[in-house]
Length: 324
Image (cartoon, rainbow, N blue to C red; front, side):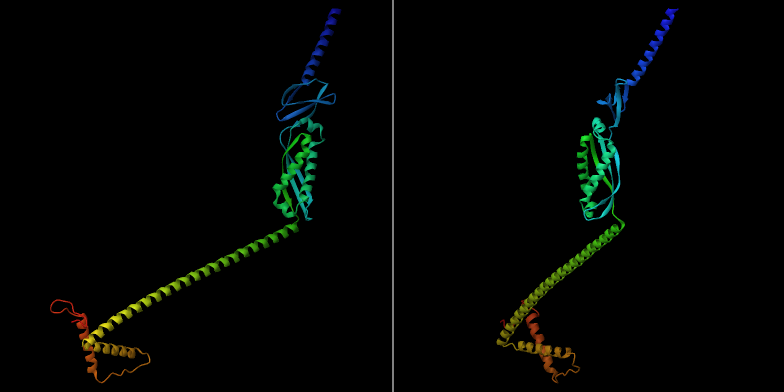
């Protein structure tokens, strides 16, 4: 009977130790999910970092101290008042994108990592934006983001953190300042519109002057060409008159009286034409001896007939005055 009692006690201890062993195994097995790292401490001292996967630690002796998210995270920067270089008060908020690269540094180099990054970012926002005028603040957001990123990233580097981006979301000037800026913008636009309108009038006047200049040049060239052609016509008329006079003179010298009658009749007819075309003349006085006019006209007809008329009986063309 004593043997059976000893056997029961031994089996109880075996079962107890087996159960404790199973419990210790379960306590020593750690599964780390993807995107996360664990820091392990042994008796309160950091010894290693567990990466994603299945790991075994010594139960009771080792423990997981920190579970850190290694993915890129977003941290909102709350709105705060910033005084610019020209003493303008603006409300500014932003956002920070950061990622933990070294789990041990992030866990042991700084206490409350998110609060540290937040305060560091807000402080540098006031520093960077406070050194700018309001106009620069509103127009140079890329410059502000770049400067903030450089400063904050260098400051968080000892913490095992990489700051990827810092973006200023909103810059809100006071209402009265916004109204002043709106009036200034309207005045600037009106100024540009007036300048463009004046430039348009100037261009129109220039084009008009150029057109008048070209018109004057073309008119002068036209008058020049007309005067040249009038002079040429008068020259040819004078040459024709000289040839006629020469022919008549030759005819008179050869005893042809019809040439004299031609000149007298021509002058007579021109005088009658001038008298008839005068606007202030109502009465035309004709000479009593109309036979003299008829005789002169007959002489003209004979002269034209002899000079420009028919061919002679031999079939030859009529010869001018004075030809034998």
